[in-house]
Length: 409
Figure (spheres, rainbow, N blue to C red):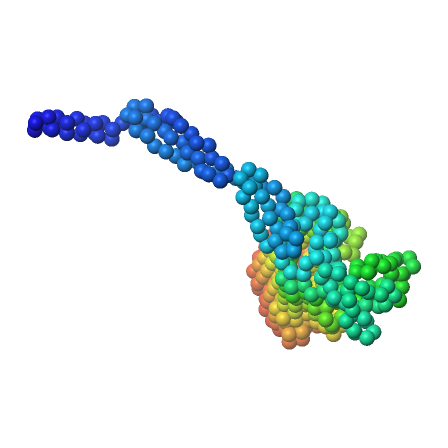
């Protein structure tokens, strides 16, 4: 009996040693195909020793249909046509045919643009998002029952609204947000956005009050178009916490136009606060960025090419730019005037850092110039011109100019 046990143990030992030295020859003996809801697998068997192993096959991607908005315009959902699983995200989705209508249906949340070619768009008024007052008495008015011959004030508060584009989203036009007195003439008739009436004088005109506290515009490609904010002189039409990110602005000719790819203009009273422009591209526009009376401005990681000026940071009357002004990590090239023009500033800290300038001076060799600065400090650090490092400068003078020598130009 002991001899038999010894023989069996020896056979097992030899088999184990042989298997350890054996190079498996695997062959698939069965396959379970994956779906978008269940993983698949391949089962292999060694043709030499008969050992088996299993390899996992990852699930397939879902075959989702188009995003569809909920009735309350708070979420949008898409469904897999194979397994019927759904995905839901906050916000709404728009396309070229309904974008303007739906943008005028929400004051907050996310708006996703589907791929396609869009025309002009604006942040304006509608019965869904605006309230009204009688202009001359300031009495509340029923936005659904307005008199066709009365002058009204329309109010729209926008808070934390995101407009999100992406690949294939092209705007063949401009994106405008205007506040102020809106009226037409006999030669330029406009339409009231709430009443739908035609306006050819001031008799039945309206005042637009659009206040913004949180707006992000991301991933839009504007061809021959601009993004413009106008507050005119309405003190309650404040615009603050606005970010323009990863957008492109492709114009036609910077020398034959007076357009500004991105502009923030005010007639006074309402100032702009906390404006951020990052990772965006401007080509062939007269001015890449134009801003009046901005408190806290940051322009970073952008490219400005073939413009009169890369940017203008201006005052309007007694309303001056102030707070923190940071221009960092940008490429400004092929301007036929100064790369950066400053108006009058007050209580501002100006930092021009790590920018690349290429062929970006006026006929006097001026790269940057300010008007009167009051209680301001400035620094110019880590910048290059035509690939040559520039001298670092800082100061607090009442005006400031950076000049490039004739040899460097």
